[in-house]
Length: 322
Length: 280
Image 1 (spheres, each protein chain N blue to C red):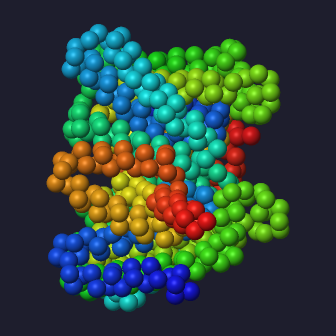
Image 2 (cartoon, rainbow over the protein chains, first blue to last red):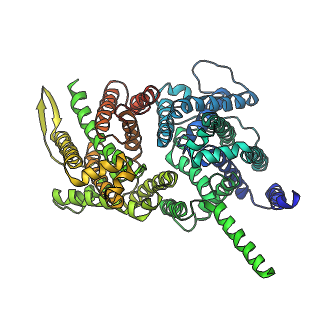
Image 3 (cartoon, rainbow over the protein chains, first blue to last red):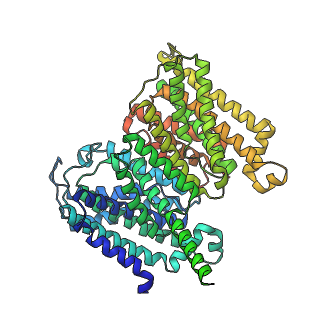
């Protein structure tokens, strides 16, 4: 067991001591990467495993973030209201993500295939519009909510918070997906009718995967918004944010949980390090172009590439011994 | 009221053009092309560039815009979608990124600012005491001519019959000697051309901005779900429901809620009748 996990243990140890050696700017980047990894894992739990592509994760993240931000926000409201402490608003935010997720899960799971994706995107758009249009004095409207309370302050404490959160999510999802549940979910992606025919209720399994995914997205969303200490519809419901999540999961490797972690870090750092070489829009252009090529030529992502490389080494070793 | 009727009819016509191509691709190939609304945006820019920057005649502008969007669609299909018809997830993700890529290209070329396209046909016309721009009326007529051509093509020609056959039963169609690749390619070309026509008029109806593809894409989702994915009649009906609801909302309530009623209807339809109004 230890032998099999040694690379993971080394990686965890390196991650834990990393902020002692790198400058503050990199630490901040690592925090962003950890949150992107959480969102990508959450997407992977639902879409990577069952093949139901969700475009609605910004909706789940947004619901959680808005509920927690709204309840813990201190100023700027017309009537005086109760300001709740974070340890109450964060669970409420996560619960809201699960509840809101069920709301769009129930109608869209009645049908198969692309309908789910279409409905999930519709939910994101509806929430976006409602937040902008309905009572902007409460929701902050287009400008969003500024000056939210933080869970911890400073780059290094935030780094450990994000890292701990990410590892908790990763280990939890890893165990779920390596169990029989994960096996059933993967089979749903391959052929849902066959699973149904073996007497397994695919609906229950999809619901389970979805609740887990929504809770993870909500958890990430709440902590992320309190890390940024601000929340605006412009980033929360943009196509770019949605694509960042999906691309991180896809180039990491769908249906693997470990792949999206790598995808999240890779994406954050590649975007940051391209900054000096390519100006504004060119950087995004190159990023989108590269993402298309990876999706087309390596649909299994980096996880698939890593497996190929490992297989190549193993074959070579066997050939050498014989 | 009259304003709602005319503007609603125009918007419905444009939405029908966009959603028609979207639903045809799904019906024939079984995949959804999320870059479809990206072609609409590119066609709008191409028309603007050809006609108002390069100063070419209108006909040349139309030809360039439509051939560019149709060419883009054909390219998308030939480059990779053809190989991934069995894997809708890859097509989903890759075409969504393609739409974003097109947005970045247009931002690089034309910058992220609103461009007001001058009306294609100048002047106004009085209908029932209200004044409407000729541009609006021409767009309405042009979109219906295109819809009629597509309907005739699908119903009366051999290629149209082959498309319907593929949509009904892929294996049966192949056994009857239909080459699915050629039919798919034709469908993508037609759908790209429809997006081109829609883009020309959509650009002059609103304005050009590189992220203008998001709203038509979401609205064509609502339309095809309401009408039934893959159904042409359903798309026309769905486009009118969504188009009139949107115009009424914009004129009566608020511009900010423009997309909400259509999407709410979509969810209601999905709960009550998951196949859509005309779905099989």
